[in-house]
Length: 309
Image (cartoon, rainbow, N blue to C red; front, side):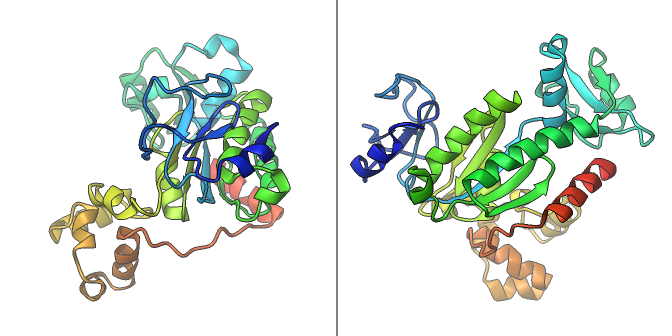
């Protein structure tokens, strides 16, 4: 990431960065959470892979998710699988652990019975999971994250939160620059792609990482949070499963904007502690800190993930 120190001092009003060379600059058009004008290119390297957002220099909470992780490792290790639909699973439980994006286009998804997955995508290559290989890659990615910041909170073998507060001086780079460089390094060194979400808290960072998969990088700023959330279904709130969605729908609540319009006391009266959580998250308020865990617990988490899928 050469030249980043100069960028930091020369681009105090920057609202865009290049995902390839990490150059900071001021985009000529108003920046939003979506990609900038397609014709816009990096003034340093001419790459069209840009990020543009008015809060790009101030956000520090990120969520990194490896794209179709198990299947991506299999495709990396066997080039003959590159253009094929790949499903991982078929163990004694007879369910799909995960699948590549090509298989997902046919409706295949995690936890689906394998017989149904084969009906939807009969041409798919079905492979048993190779947990040792996945753990090796997962730990390599984790090491790259902890090289950026000690504040890494793994959620599973293939995803984690990061808090990059205070890392600018160490890396001579803004968090967004460090993260784009990280994504590039994972591709180069590990042979898989990742998607990253950047925001001002964990809830929104995780939402953002799902917005542009695979190989995506999305940003949700503080100023746009409430408007961004309003039109999303309540199922977009982390931890709200189908049973709770059904219960909320029975009460006439299907979208986050309806939660935003309700008083916290009303939601608490209806749904108890969950109602308080719904009220806070509907407004994008998530005070949880990124919480690093020990290596021992992290490895245990990875093993549980592999067994329970």
